[in-house]
Amino acid sequence: MNKPDSPPDNPGVSLSPTGDPWLLTPGPLTTSPEVKQAALHDYGSRDSHFIAVNRRIREALVEIAGGRDSHVCIPLQGSGTFVVEAMLGSFVPRDGKVLVLVNGAYGTRIVKICRVMGRDFVTQEAPEDVPNDPEALERTLAGDPEITHVVAVHCETTSGILNPIEDIARITARHGRGFLIDAMSAFGAVPLDAREVPFDAVVASSNKCLEGTPGVGFCIARSEALAKTEGNSHSLSLDLYDQYMSMERNGQWRFTPPVQTILTFDRALQEFAAEGGVEGRGGRYRKNCRILVDGMRRLGFQTLLPDELQAPIIVTFHMPADPRFQFEAFYDGLRRRGYVIYPGKLTVAESFRIGCIGRLGEEEMRGALGAVEDLLSDMEVESCAPAAA
Ligand SMILES: *Cc1c(COP(=O)(O)O)cnc(C)c1O
Image (cartoon, rainbow, N blue to C red; front, side):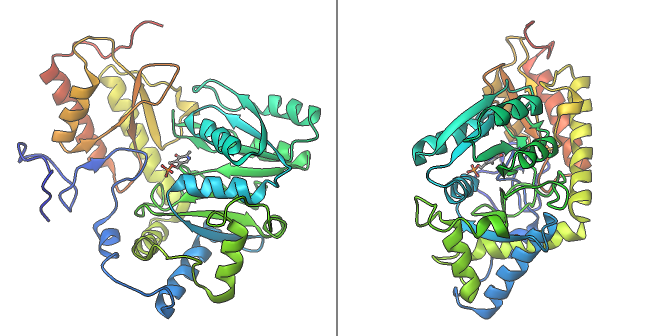
């Protein structure tokens, strides 16, 4: 397949099987040729095959979350943020009060959603390189009986930090409050099992660790909690209760279904199962992450996070202080060599990010490291050490 913007001046670069650069980003990300191929069909929304595919996807997602007898899956059109907003609006009653645990841009986005929706909220904040603090949560819940729901981000993609979701869930349950999780960038790669971690709802999307194409989010909801959400939502299209009831009635989507995204997601979930589920997928990402971190450290880069806080999803590196290291040139040079990375989103330090997720393995990670090394030499960068703190 020819792509007009594939790197023309580097005939030797290794591109994906469809001639695209490898995406070392937090999503959208590189998908398999078979996943993309699965989109080459049309179905009407009432088609029985299409309805069966939807059922299969929803069952597979509940299974991944360990919620077979307790939870249901509600898919929703849109990017991940749509389903985050839908979860907050549907689960938090209009007179509810949310405690948002914030240590990055996605926690901050949840706060913004609460503000826009007009839900009362308080925050418990930590710097971007520090996990949510369970002890502070304990104190806040003990001191504020009006808090109805706690919201946390499993892997804060801003830095790549892993938050202590099991501890947060346990404390929140002990205080009898609802627990809502944005697990967008962790679901499918970092274990989260409803039989061990009590939660009312967790949301994620098709295009992160499940390696589908973008366009659909989903909520895994505890049935008992979902049953109490009728009439909560401020929004028609983002009402998960209505979306669920409608889909249960006839197996169809309320509004135009993202047909091709569903078809590619179905194929992606088959590949996920074939890889060994969360264990297999998470294992490949952990290996990718190890290769990346070791290789970048060998070149002199420093990671933002110590290894024990790092989720195997995306790694933040400090920007080198050497003035010959210009991020735009670094980004463009890697793009020409077939690898797309991601700018930093931190407030605590100048940084950039490299992802380990998507249809990538050892070969691609080593290829990316080779490209970085080659580029540093072209740029005549002498040291990749960050500015002294
Ligand atoms: C990707 C992501 C989202 C959703 O982002 P969209 O751009 O709307 O898909 C939400 N939360 C986290 C933690 C994410 O990584």
